[in-house]
Amino acid sequence: MTIKKTFESSLLELATNRDIKQVFYDFLEITVSVFTANSSFGKTLEAYSRYTKIEVKEQFPAILYQLLEEMHSRDNDQKGNDVLGEFCEKYYYQEVDEKRILSWKECEKAAMNAIPRDGLNFVKAPVELLDVGCRSGRIMMSAYKKYGSKLAFHGVEYDWVYILISTLNLYFSNVKSSEVLLIDQANENAFQSSFIISPLPMLIIRNEKAEYSKGYEVYKVYLRTKEILKKSN
Image (cartoon, rainbow, N blue to C red):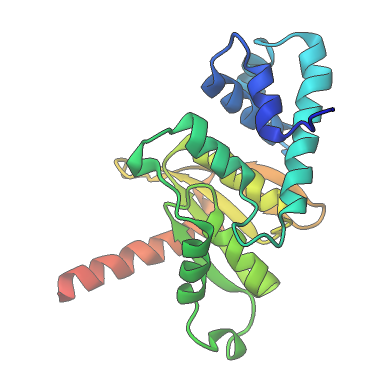
């Protein structure tokens, strides 16, 4: 009896005699670079250097195919289709509580609460949705399933691994109006970079300039509002 390979089993197989965290990270870097119009090749070439030509040409594409197949097959699953986020929690951030991702059900609830009741019926679409500390992008994924193109999505993260995961999750979920921002909270110039998912053609664009980031403008409004509420309390 042939056991069907999964994204998880194939990545674990590739990680035989290797660190699974490194393999998962390399898979994320390489995959993002494949779909990014203006990739930063330094990290990508470094990742490629750790694998044989056969692994690069055959195993990585096969693992990507399994990821896409699983995400698609679970599109209507009650537990969601965040395959990357689940793998990350299980193998990359095992038992690291502050890195925990909300369950799909919790994310669906958060997505619904983020939009005022009937709010989308009275304003011109798209409505900006900001998810600060977006982790794997799960809230944005669930919100997109419910509201679709009525929303424009901006995810803010401080962890590069989650930046890569949320970018791929939004891209593979066909969330066209979206951006994932790397923010340094300790830096006065908080914006570091972002990945913008362009609708036409559908690709990922690496952005290094704050002035080109619509999400950063939304994030600054969030910070100002947060400060005003803090002073009023």
